[in-house]
View 1 (cartoon, helix red, strand yellow):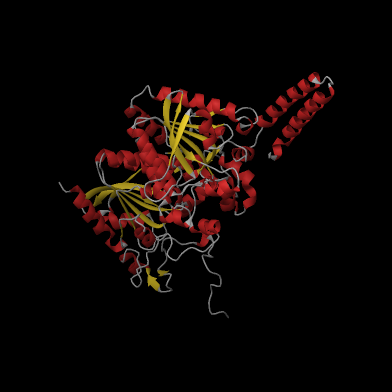
View 2 (cartoon, rainbow over the protein chains, first blue to last red):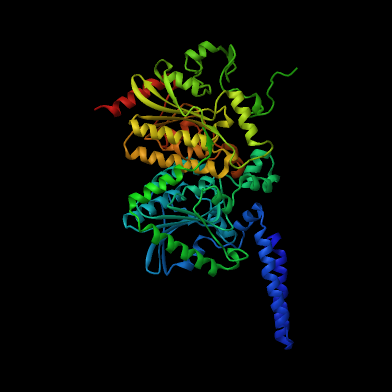
Length: 315
Length: 281
């Protein structure tokens, strides 16, 4: 499974594999040729990935092979125990949460979860949480606060679920409450966009001391498709909408709306889960260590001040 | 010669012809009845026959709530800029200019303080006529500052919401206004300053999912559309018709998300009674 702009890379990779395979069988010396092709591959990847359009970033963020929340959690934690349920209505499988530890440090993880195959995708509701999911996340965050454990939120959602039951159970209220409560959490909160950061569904768990985007992700008020359908009155302007929304990590950092970007291995996170996980793990540990140096009151004040400064206007 | 002018169901009027506030001498109610605008105004812009609440803006709400229409406006001159240089079918900067000219408003919210039946209050009131009452940086900032003001003076806060949601043309910036306003409301809540959120027709999207749902008291006018996703989006997404009365004030009250529904004609007195009880020493 690869995206259109990945095709030249895939083809070259395939060629190298073939050559290696051929050499293995025949004893023909191909080391030099392989080496040359590998160098070519690196520069090809660089060329493609340094010139991605915003729409291509969106496609990478949605890549079917891209690691999802639990992939990272299982990769970076030594132990992880998942918790379920909002204690009111149900267990929303589009939002996961639990305690895990990294190098002896206990952390609460929350995040939207997407599915890998048709059955999983349905069970996970395509990563679109219902109000019950946001309430589950809040319940767990309060638990983390009670036991003085830092919180890491991994954000990956095409949006909060726009359904009849979701409305009846107060989707808007759940998201609003989460934001307000997250501002007052006494423990460090680190939010990392690992895939899609769509609007209210994303920010409902993305209020933190650090808001970080991975390199090939998007975060904005609306998806390019929906933006196209509303402003252009057609689904066909998604590329234009992605450009207009300026929704990439680079854009958001430039606007001062996020704190930093996590670089992914060349070719994207889906090409190297282990490598990406190490980057993620190191960033989490580094940020927690820095945040634990300041008092809870200071953290809360800085968290509020940071968001209070966001916005551009004339007086 | 047709008997009925409207052949198709739903709203057919192009946006440019949409009327929010009655400005002529006569006003035609949805029931078909024609009413003199003075009579409508004297009845708090509510139809005397069937209680239909006509959409009104900040000018009318301020008039209804502030004693003798006396108030001090906050940050009246603040206007949107165009940080993203956003262009869709037309440039955002052009939309802003046209809206300012058409509505005589600077953006989609006005904030002010004054007295309501003698009680000092801060009111932030949204205007749907300005780009669908959408929330961009100006709406977020003005609301944040109104909350700061309420916090400093310990005056109760009333926010009257009327919005299609976040303003797409400010993308990431508009999304973060949800965070900003929620942050300020967290502080207001800690300081135990009362906040009443009044939702009016329509209140949807990022506005509902931030300050509109965070009142100590969440109340609404009758028959208002209130929701997170808009009904059209949900209908398309679910691929089925929505139940009757879905996402109305009455639906939200029934589901436990409103404290009460208030008739606009009783709004000032109801708010005064509630705040008097809270502020009682």
